[in-house]
Length: 332
Image (cartoon, rainbow, N blue to C red; front, top):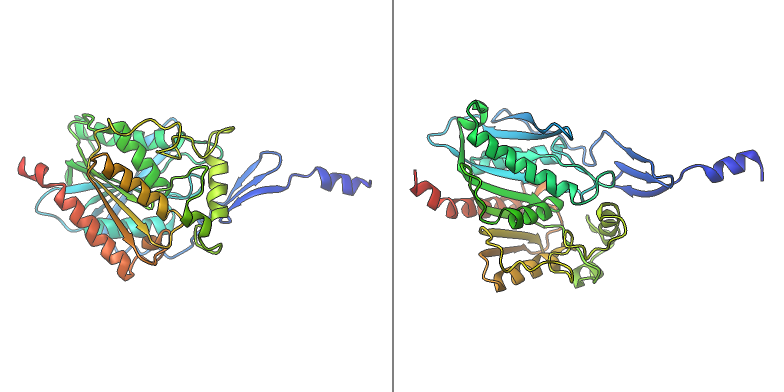
């Protein structure tokens, strides 16, 4: 064997790749691109103000706050939007995330909180879930602070907090709902959760996973890749962090869940898991609303935020917030 051949044979080679921005090599090295997977233009027309805030100095994690630029006669609900990306990619700074948060703040008339979290495989689960919890505790600290950030507190109604998550973010939102339950976050209060195509898994394939098209935006190969990179090493997709109803998952029956809205596209490979989740939760007497958008793929609301289904979803979220804000508004 020549020296060149031997060198080539021993050189690290790519073993995993995610949407062109994450590459894992045979020697364990990881290369991340500074560019987003979805290089779309940012539509910042000045109608929504925003800024970044450090919420976890230990891990250098930031969140992005958004609020309508125009003044409001009353204080606004707080709406968390936790980005997706299979726990492996994504950021509050990516244009698709920013554009959706602009729209949420504008059309929901809400203060939007978009936190980052540690990504796998450098930081496998439960790191992302712990970071989501810290982002909520940051809000509680702001609500209770003697010298809070006026940019936030002058417009935010801490008694009307809603936590939403997209894909992997939806998984995080579920675990926050379990952990927080009816916990006292005073003076803040979570009124509901919105799970947008939540990223759940399991060792047994669902029909939508097994029969979904290979060219889907989120296909089975990519689903499996995300789980390989994010599940604790040596574990399976039946880990309770992945499969809320798996053989090792604790019962959710005793959990005092806040109202929940579960949304999924009818052509999303995750559809069956989202539908099963909603049915099981409803069977336990939890207040769950399930909405399926026929023919829509994974992430339809951020891929084409101005489509008819995306517009309809915004109206549904708005109605959910209003319905679950009544108790808080009556106390004012």
